[in-house]
Each structure stands twice: as C-alpha cells, then as structure tokens.
Length: 243
Image 1 (tube, rainbow, N blue to C red):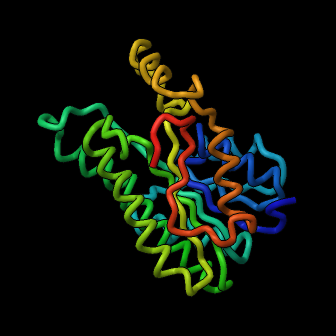
Image 2: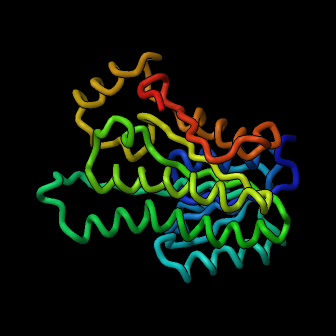
C-alpha cells in the first residue's frame, strides 16, 4: 500500500476534509494521529477508520498544546513522516466591522496553528531525514471572495509554505500547499442556497469538490510519486480558479 508504515498527523480530523484525509491514509497503510480540538470528534473519526488510528485533542493555536500532541505521536509511533495541516475556521465579518478578537482567532488557528504544526512536525521529521508537509489553503486567496481575516490567513499559509519548503529541502522534507475550492463540508452549512448555487455556477466541472477529492490529492503529495514536488500550490477546485 502507498503509505504502509508511515506515521501521519492530520489536524481538523473530526469532520469534513480532515476526516476524509485520515480515512484515506489509514486505508493506504499509514498509522494516523487524528488531531482535533474536539476529542470526541477525533475519536469518532478514529473509530470509523480501518487500520491504526489514534485520537488526540489539541488546540493548534497554542504552542504547548501542539508540542504535547507531537510528543504523544512520538510516544505512540516512534516517528513522524507526514503532517496535513487541514484545521481551519472562519466567521462571516465585513471588513469594516471585524472585531479584533475574530481577526486574532482566525489568524491564530489558520496561520499560527499551521506554523506551529509545521515547526514541531519538521523537528520530528528531521530526525528521519525525510518527510512531507501538506498545508491546506483556499481558492479564496485567488478570487478574494470571503472575509478578510480568512483570506489573509490562507494567503499567509501559501507564503509560509514557499518559505519553509526552501529551508527544509536540505532536511529531505517537502512542503506543499493544497488549495481546495468550494468543498462539500460542514463548514458550508448555513450558506444561503442562492450563494451556494452561484458558487457551483462558477465551477466549470459543475459541482463542488467532495472531501474525498481533496484527500486523494493530499495522499499523492505525501507519496513518493510526488518526491520532487515541493513549494507548490496544488489546486483542487474543478477549474473554478487557476493559480
């Protein structure tokens, strides 16, 4: 199997794309740490998977929480090979009325959380001399559609990826950005039907992505098939936005 024996750390694993990513890697032979701020959600994902999956509660915006989660992975599996930074949040705020606390929370989870998991994950991977990091951004960066804090945080993820891909290449660690478009996840719930239809109308392939579409590309980026791919933005959006 493609990821037999690898150890994979997936954030935001309790639902949506993160859950699909955990299932994909587990089905392909990996040992997976399902990471979520909600321990019950992480455990539900682990229980739904084939193979060896452990659930870990972690607030990725908190440095000590991330360090603790990484330590649990090392104690459970002895190594780390792949990090998928999928966890993300947003809120519906107009720019001129964005509260400071909403800006700080979105940036804290989406960008700072990605940085912390990259840093601590890369420290473990460097012990092996190899590894792959997949950071999840958003096509909203290219279109500019979406709340300013969300778009800014996801643009930051792209910049972070390119910077650390260069720095970590001598350590044998590849870093890429996975850039989904509109995806059928719980985060899309509550969006007015007319907005949803407008999004779908703007996708040449005529539908939103399913979480499994994204998970399969994450699996490719972590595999030896992508062994010479680093520092890249890989779009999964049905042609909605070209990057």
